[in-house]
Length: 474
Image (cartoon, rainbow, N blue to C red; front, side, top):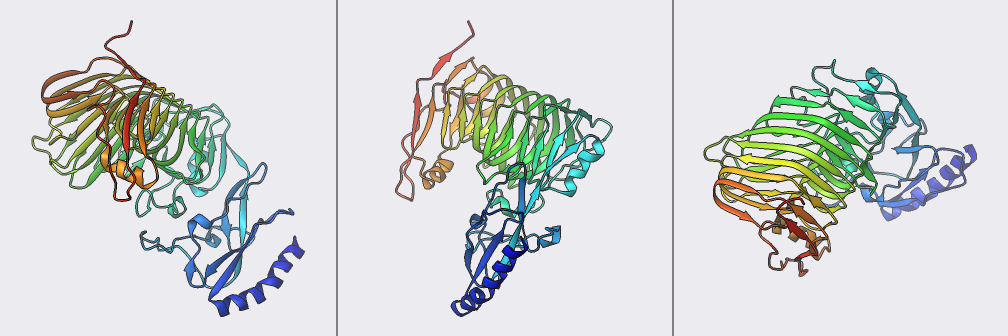
């Protein structure tokens, strides 16, 4: 290993001199263990950041990669922070510019057992770690849990690399149960067992009897995670069961406020929710007259991800108490997810009850998905009972409440040309009481919209194929 590093340093000087003349620098990646494997260096314009998309993610058997560091010891203050040279992003202040040729060293972590509540709480001290739960834990003795990991990015779809204080490791529950999570006052807007997860994974975990009962503005709250961001294509939450959850919240809507309440994770960008089960009930009271967006669902609220083989049994009760909310206020409510991209082989049951004036024509409810942004919903079923009372407008679909044209344009920009609902079934008949303009489209709230054109010249079409609707179970 010593001779390998000596060789790297021997070629670094002439490369650096050449790079200086050409206004470029070379970054070498040392895997930091005894191996013949090697990674290709990256050439970066001197004085610029090494972009997040150029960051290598090596693999090593029985280890988890934990980032790149400026010294082999891989201490926290030696971590190299990647960035972007695009003006599109608001750049994190702690991203680093490459001002010379250099070597970065890989950090590797091994599984660490968790036996006690104190050891679980200490996960926040190493957010890159690999943790395995060795037995059940009871958190009911903690009156107000402080979430592990924090969201502080400039906006949700910024690279996960920039989420400096989110959980970025692996948490493997090994089938054990964490029960009695209590959140009575928000310490962070994004709250749950984990506040924020970025390129991290939670696997094989059971949670029972979580109670999230509080008053707050701007929350993204769920038992397992407040917000999740995945860039690596791996599953974010897999083989987890979160049951017996109670979410009881009073919140006030201000101009530009976003709220999300769910039984698993409040918001998710990228990654996969797979083979999970959730159950429980939520009671949300929304006051205030500002514009913004409200999300409520069993699994996820604001969601741009893949969801597969998941089941839900949630009773959702939403009460809008403001007499005159802003017409720009939008509410999305779904039996499985409030909004969604790709959903496959999932089922939802339970109930959705909504009452009170939500404002304008912006209340969308789906037996499975409230707002379908783009992508495909396939081979899913819903028997969610829907009741809407005392509001001016409500659009309900047995599977999807609305096809969202605004996000359809975004999907077209990514090359998605069809938003599809296929092979899905809904059983039930929504109840409208004192609703001025009720809309029910059986499978989708308003049926198939007209094809959408986009500024990029790529069209977006909408299609419902081989779906069935029944008013009652036989």
